[in-house]
Length: 117
Image 1 (spheres, rainbow, N blue to C red):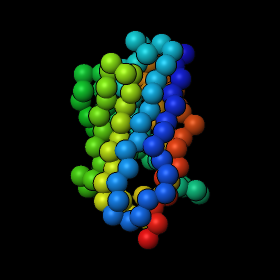
Image 2 (image 1 turned 135 degrees about the vertical axis):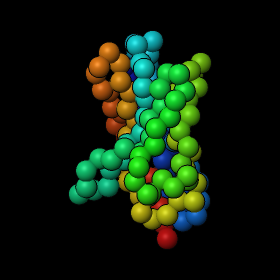
Image 3 (image 1 turned 90 degrees about the vertical axis):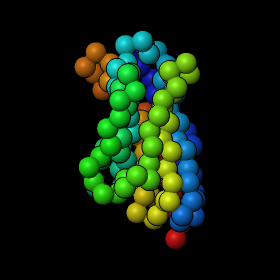
């Protein structure tokens, strides 16, 4: 089992930045990929970015990232980060951390990001 706890969400003005954190616990040694998804009410959850245990990254092909978001990880702290810059109101969503371990996807409860115009 893997547990994930997100933090760092909140209210920010358009143009501002936030850094989300996700701390993993439990069988962290079995995690190979971690990442972030987001979900706007009434819409499907969508990929933001993923990072492998080797540090390889994959970002959504959707236009909304456009180099504004950066995913990173600190293995010593079992933590993955999402640095979000130049935020706009369309980025308002619940951001979920995910981890894959032995073919099983685990999810956190999410952290709400609200961008005010």
